[in-house]
Image 1: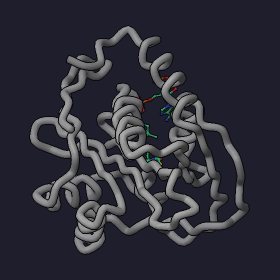
Image 2 (image 1 turned 90 degrees about the horizontal axis):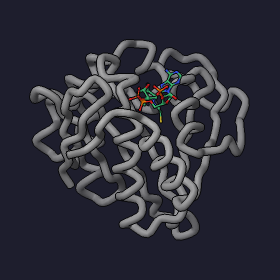
Image 3 (image 1 turned 120 degrees about the vertical axis):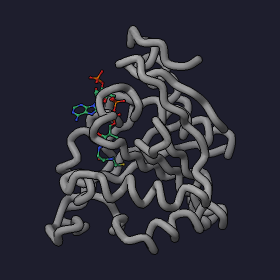
Image 4 (image 1 turned 60 degrees about the horizontal axis):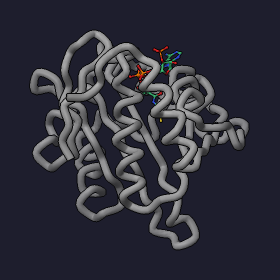
Amino acid sequence: MQKTVRLKDQSEVLIREMERGDLDDSHAFFKSLPEDDRAYLRREVTKREVVERRISEIESGAVMRLVAVADGQIVADGSLEISDEEWKRHVGELRLIVGQPYQRKGLGALMARELYLLAASAKMEEIIVKIMRPQEGALSIFRRLGFREEASLHDYVQDQVGRKQDLILMRCDLEALWKEMEDFLASGDWERTR
Ligand SMILES: CC(C)(COP(=O)(O)OP(=O)(O)OC[C@H]1O[C@@H](n2cnc3c(N)ncnc32)[C@H](O)[C@@H]1OP(=O)(O)O)[C@@H](O)C(=O)NCCC(=O)NCCS
């Protein structure tokens, strides 16, 4: 897929599938993230080999990844992980990160919509997100899109600087997600696609 979207500030961004040729740009994107945003990621994405592994996961079919590109640079990264365990095949795990200069412009919601469409085409029934408690922006956007907090595991994970954090599991079935997402995007007064 490939889609040009217009953000709240009227700037245009291309959302498309990530490919192997994005390795260096993706690495540069992760290195440019402020420590605060990077601290709660699952992996140490400033390491090139970790970014390389993320791309190999696309090729093996384990993960679908999208990037948002503006002025030739990656400005957001989103993924949908597909479990290879039969009992979780109907569930996709979503992850999203928007570079700070592009936050609060609607890009996170637009990326979530494209990831939703990928989940629907893969016939998933439900999407989950896992968030560390301090990720307030993430909690807020996913609540807004219709996700509900299902479980909270006290001090279950460590952030990138070694602090124990609560892990919050949020989930949403695809039907409810579509409705909330469309309502949310329609409530904005910005033109979102063209
Ligand atoms: C969470 C994140 C993806 C949101 O992306 P974004 O492009 O800024 O989100 P949007 O502009 O589409 O915001 C949509 C709505 O979500 C809510 N929201 C988003 N960020 C928020 C924040 N920091 N604080 C409060 N509400 C927030 C708001 O309701 C917002 O609508 P509004 O701006 O009209 O009020 C981004 O802040 C980010 O990458 N954070 C760091 C990494 C992270 O926590 N990723 C999630 C792990 S899965």
